[in-house]
Image (tube, rainbow, N blue to C red; front, top):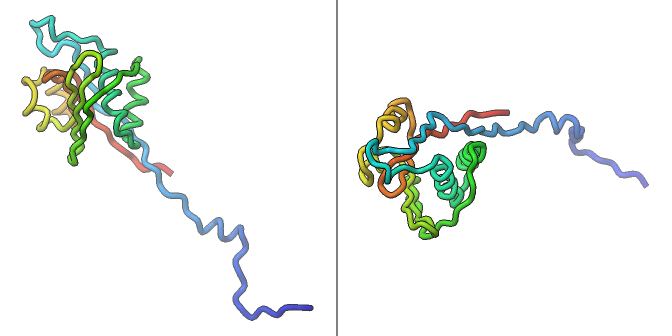
Length: 157
């Protein structure tokens, strides 16, 4: 028995595949990264090792990892980041984050320079220079700014 089809002819699968466009995927990068191990020049009590600063920053970013945060984590892992346990994590709608480190009790803050400036001591010269160069995020530990950076994306096929 033969069937008669009076509808339109379907496109071949090869033609259908040509019509499908792949979406542009953004690639994220870290820019203007500055890390200051001693933000108060004459105080040895504020010195922190670069590995400790990047570890705390990575721990804070890990709590809310999106595509931009994953790029930052990869950037920090290239610099010898280890893991740390945080408690009392909070994130505001403007993207600011705060937490405490479980073992040391240090308070971590990450947010815009304007927001962090209200909660910390005046920034070190290197942090201020990074902000002037375009850094839009500042990382502080116990009310002292230790790092500044920006995250940017570019579309990629």
